Image (cartoon, rainbow, N blue to C red):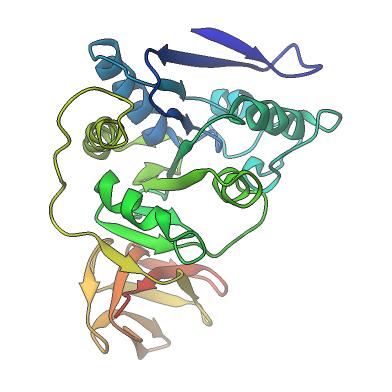
Length: 296
């Protein structure tokens, strides 16, 4: 392990763990760009235990906690500037702490062929891989190889590490979103363990670790860009489904009761439910569910 120092900052040191042996590919796995998304942190650390006992045939870096000041405050952004780090890559060496941290990570990942960035989608979220597979078709095969149940086409927000790595440096990069994180850095232990196993298997697939790759099952489903529905009125929302469910067009998602009148929400297409509110009184503008249209 070595410590990556952020330019001009005595409060932010980033731990980088490395395994290097042979002429295989260069891979970087990152976690906690958003500090409270700790399922990804735990998955990265479980993966490190497997790497310690394996024969590495490439150059692998694992950075479990990128945004250290946010991590130690159990919040999404650094308390020093409140910037969303995953919207400011490649950063700058002369900006605020988050901008300088992004610049340090950008430099640290410059020579990687593959990047996997671990995030969390909340306690009421469901796992998926996020990739720009429409513009970078070679990512399709890699997303299938990682073995998560669903791949979502990115919405394309600028400044994300994986997107800027694809666009600017032609690296093969994507995100894995895992349940947990918000609120308070909660870890979904089951998904962290499964993610670590799938990452280790993926490293075998790309020949960064010696061993037999096992094709994951079931078949990966590809989806279009994510969409969300927000409450237009204040009332009692009651869900009819759970995160991760696949619905056919017209299936009931949930209902909103306002002053005795009930409005039903139904699937606008064949979809996968990404997130959905628990039963509660919701307010105008509050997200009540998120979904991905399934690719035909």
